[in-house]
Image 1: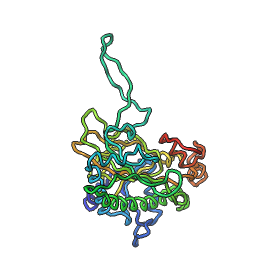
Image 2 (image 1 turned 135 degrees about the vertical axis):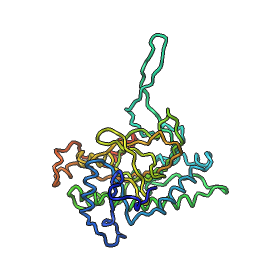
Image 3 (image 1 turned 90 degrees about the vertical axis):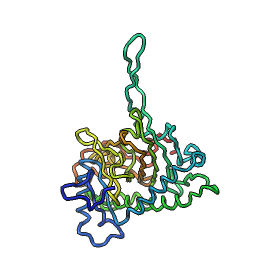
Length: 346
């Protein structure tokens, strides 16, 4: 990973780096004000939909430990990992292997052309969906309520005790949740709303963290297809400086995302874009299939309380000119369930 000290003023990273110190409860005196940070968030959300953050709530040791735990998890024997199959979890938490069709990021309606020759015509094009090639393990928010509940960990055996793996990942979860609250406060101020506007709807947030391992892909394979995230906020750490994430720029070109030491990448999901009446961007991103190595990453998806009402009129009535509301109000949890294709009652 690149060090912050390696960057000169003329070598600002992409996406831009934002210091959240003024919003951290553990912050010391900062030369930045909260409004300074909010202005930077405003610019990044308008222009890119991505930025990266550093905060006193986060340090490289926690990130490194989480990646070591992730690698140890995926190196467990397959039969141990499969004791925690996501298909056996009511909340679809747990492990999915390389052959799973259920953790592809490519939208259902996105197709690629497959070319086949026949005896009657030299070329026929047919549409099919590309499948991502990766392993995953999903952890979610505990507690009682819709989309909350116990996680689905592998069975502990005499030879394989996963207690240490869980402890390190729990510390990373706690750090990501603290950073999510700080980001949400800055995001609210960036829209001219009260600082607590979003966080008042995040007292019991529906959150998920996914451990990912991508094998070295072949040219014909897709690591992770182009997509937008469906939720509110995504925080991502990659395992190397150029970890493979690519972000689509305004000109349609794909730009590699730098991973800085002690920092995480942040992007807005579709829910945040809809809540801001599409004033802020939910940007397409993907994982390059040209990496000549195995890759690990840990996205943390922080959403709102299930019953929080996502209503673009909240922002439309604010000080910014974001136009007339484009979407009807909806419960945040119902929105997620619709996006994820989950069956639920009420």
